[in-house]
Image (tube, rainbow, N blue to C red; front, side, top):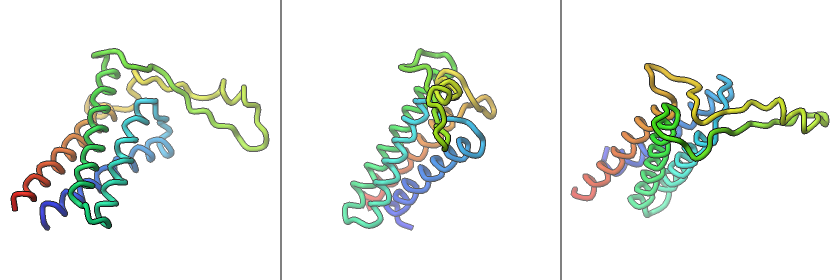
Length: 157
């Protein structure tokens, strides 16, 4: 497989897997995303869109590079979020809420009062001492680096 093609595959598969994992934790595991968790997803959404376009449009290298930038932005936001969670620095926002209104005309005030309060500075889940934001930084950072290195190698060939 050529370096450019491998870069495109990485730029598509990694953010797809990370977003699928995030939604799995949210809808199966019951871990609601805080505001900074959503910010990390936006970079992946952009990465997925640009990588998918790179498979069908002629500007493959440019679109793959843009996908890599989306993944890298998610990694940087993940690093910042992990620092907020570990108390290394203060974040821009500390709380957010996931409000859902039930069917059948539920009372909006009751729904607001019953909504979970998700703090950006509290780790909801961790493994081996690393939070989800920390893993996003590690995986996304490695993927973005791989995309850029493969694109650079592909240009020389």
